Structures are given as C-alpha cells and as structure tokens.
Image 1 (cartoon, helix red, strand yellow):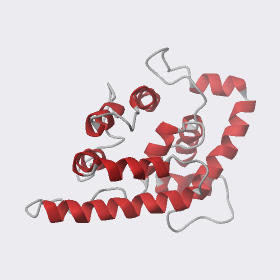
Image 2 (cartoon, helix red, strand yellow):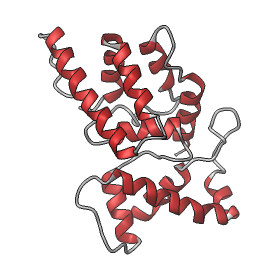
Image 3 (cartoon, one colour):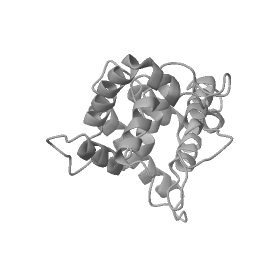
Image 4 (cartoon, rainbow, N blue to C red):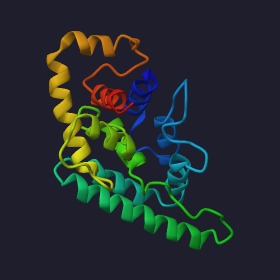
Length: 202
C-alpha cells in the first residue's frame, strides 16, 4: 500500500496552518496519484467537509488542528475536543446554510482523525480501522478484545509492534521495497506496523 507513504509525503510538504488560504492548503495536503480512498468513499467524504469548514471558519479550524497536534496533551482528550469542534462547526455551518443537505462531518469513526495524526506525526500514529484492529488482536491472541473504538490502545499496540519490526531489518526492508525515493515518505513511520496489522487481520 505504497499510496499511504505518498500521502504522508504530500502532507509533510504542504501542511502550513498559517497559510493565507487554509482551505487550499488543506486540499493540497491530501493528494495521491493512485487513490483517494483514504479520505473519500461512497457516502463518506470527511476531507470535503473539512475543506468546507476551513472556508467557513478558518480561525476555529486552525485552533482545532493546533490542539490536535499538540503532543504535550493527552491524545484521547485531544481527539475528543477535535470531535466536539467538528460537531459545533457542523451545527453552525447548517445554521448559515439552511438549504444544505449535509448532516454529517464524517469524523465520528475516528478514521480521518487518525489520518490527520498519522500524516502529521508518522512515527507516532497510523491510519485506524476498528475492525482491522479487532481482527489483528484476535490473531495475536490478546486477552482483552475491545468491543468499541479504543484508538488510544490502538496507537500503543502499533508502537509496540514497531519496536519488534525495527529489530528485524530484513523484514523492514522487505516491507518497504515498493517505496520510491522522492515520491514516498522515507522517515520512520508506523505505516509498517499498520501494514503488519492488516496482514495479520487478513
């Protein structure tokens, strides 16, 4: 899944919350030459809604991302505040656009929030899929399989997996042989652990 490394590279190159046009900056951060499915599926388009939010209230959105990306604060509290901010923005957006058919900001399943974190701090976070996480833990014979979203635990598990993957240099190289210089992100990233989780779950 090399397209994930390409998207991390694009985000790292373009993220600038102080840009004059926050919506355009945000749009440039999410680019990929192969697929858009990380942020767009049928009946699920969180990126499009966040672009609208940047246009609607850039100051509030900038503050939300500043808080989400503040590593001095508890991760689950940051995610909770970001989700609350999305709810508030959607409420105000619908009030200002009463004819809009939008009733969802599409961040409630944590997939897109995890993507923001994974693109900003690729060595600490990774894309999130609750069903994949559950299936992987089952294969790992974990004692406590979560019945609902537990994104904090997910990040901890992936960091633990990463320490084992890094010790096996041959495996790490094999999992990255599909990456191309300049096109794909080359720094440390939990995408390796996320790929391993998907392999285990499948």
